[in-house]
Length: 447
Image (cartoon, rainbow, N blue to C red):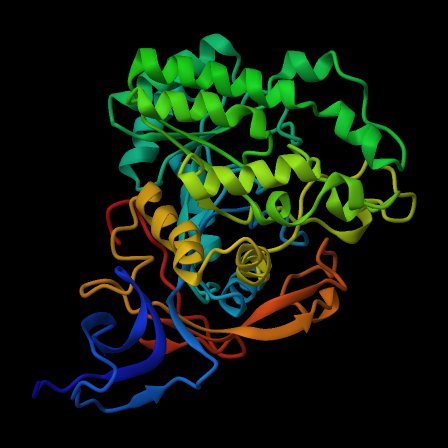
């Protein structure tokens, strides 16, 4: 080939659409322009040859991140979140509509969020909208404004400004969204089941686990699947924790229900049996469950019942985690993991016989497809040249204080992980998190 490219990457391990193989990848004008054999003649202004122990992956796409900006920027913020994401090999994230003030529930609040994020983001960032009581007439406008879909809760969200939908409101919202073929993403826990469970209290994790039973997830997921069958809309189950729900999800998919499902690194890495008393950094909703449940979730990923893995990065200040008293009943629920997801999942995945191609499918390919990010998540010609240089055998011990997260609280602190991100590239340019931010704000259909 005689064409001149901007940059060419040569890797002895490259995770492309057809699996893992040696290869070369050429970039022009921020897009992947060619994918060829390792030793192909690809003249370029610059050549990057990966080390023997490195693999070239597409940049990861994390579609479940709570940036909390504006309004609760002390919890995270776009600057720190996107630096952490870049250091973890993530090149695109989609921000959740709650925990910021205002929540993203109308076009005016979306404008506020975009103005806040602009000039702060080191990676590409998109936005979910919110479906709450009383904003049904605003959903179409948000859809037209470019949100990637709409999040709702079926129980209290943890913040009063983002209330849950009751059964009638859920039907109305799903019916409204179906007219635009818009995606509804659901925090699926049943409020009545939780109301009848023991209350969360004290330092014993087992008591907190009993307060968020599997039955709450199972009932809510059954409700969502039934409505999706009847209404015909697209639904996505957020942060699946209960493995009991896998059979009904598989059955719904076999019946043609338009449902996709995600889970998270903390459900695939940790088990309830190992969480110490008072370790509120592990608190999240739905909760981390038993070892047997964890292995069933891994089987659900392997057979395709679970589509993808996302962080559900939901940070807060150290004070809100109440590590001083270790009370699971009053601590904020959320695991901070944005920078660590790839290493955490790879550490566990390879123990179960999975390869990097599987991890890339779960954390880049399927997340991109579900959100409609058509130029992301793949090392294919025409895709954005978003790349991750990953050393799968480079082990390290997590130091929460050394992460790019705004607050040094993480369930992964002091945990040994395999695999280190050494470089992250956005549209053919290496990301320098100490330099000026060069990410782009994305709307649905723009990438």
